Length: 159
Length: 145
Image 1: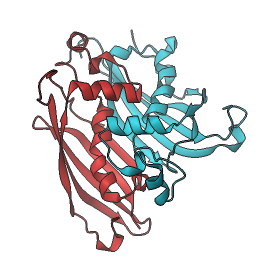
Image 2: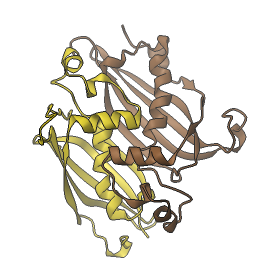
Image 3: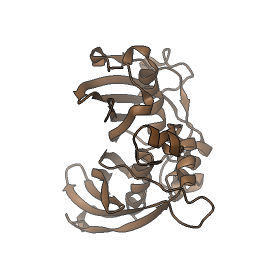
């Protein structure tokens, strides 16, 4: 199966809301071997001026990869998930992610490039905080939180 | 203790850290992140798609490597930009039931650049496993008071 070159420029609008919970921040922090108290102890986070527990710098990958899943699951994309290798990743934080945030992600396919028998696909997730529970209704009052950029290499046969 | 901008110099060594990784760590990361790609936990599946064996999530390595920076910065939210390229996979041997590590990742950090106008320091990370650089251009931009 080949990658559809028409994917470039495609966007997937913000779908479901991701609720950032304290226990998820703690679980993710432990999983990346983080020990900073601001991930675990609300008082420690507040003493640094944060509203609640602070997420580790790569926490936004949870939201970004959920957005990516829309592309990978899209039958029109031609992407075989078992042949996907992560090539590069970037996080730009516009403001910290803290427990209690309600996040949505808008996915943009910025690049599709043939590589041997496979392809390199670059996606960008624009992550926003919303105040209510509905991603569409809140579109006018959402706050930019992070921009994540990711390139995946879909290996062709024999790669 | 948070760093002070005027006390920083380009090339300054911020220390190093050695991390032991096991298959259990990968299962924990899969659960925490929601990335259940079987190449990170199933040997037969991983070799079946042409990999040397089960490999760590690139995002596990990236996320674990930045802890050195977070601890140095004093506030995790000071890391305003963090990027890397995944240059080599990190194979993690199955050492279940033994006290041995399945892989060892060594992380070193130096200050790569300073931006006085923005009040930021770029921290360059060297991340090595099995004698190979597994991350390239691993750079964290940190807001410094």
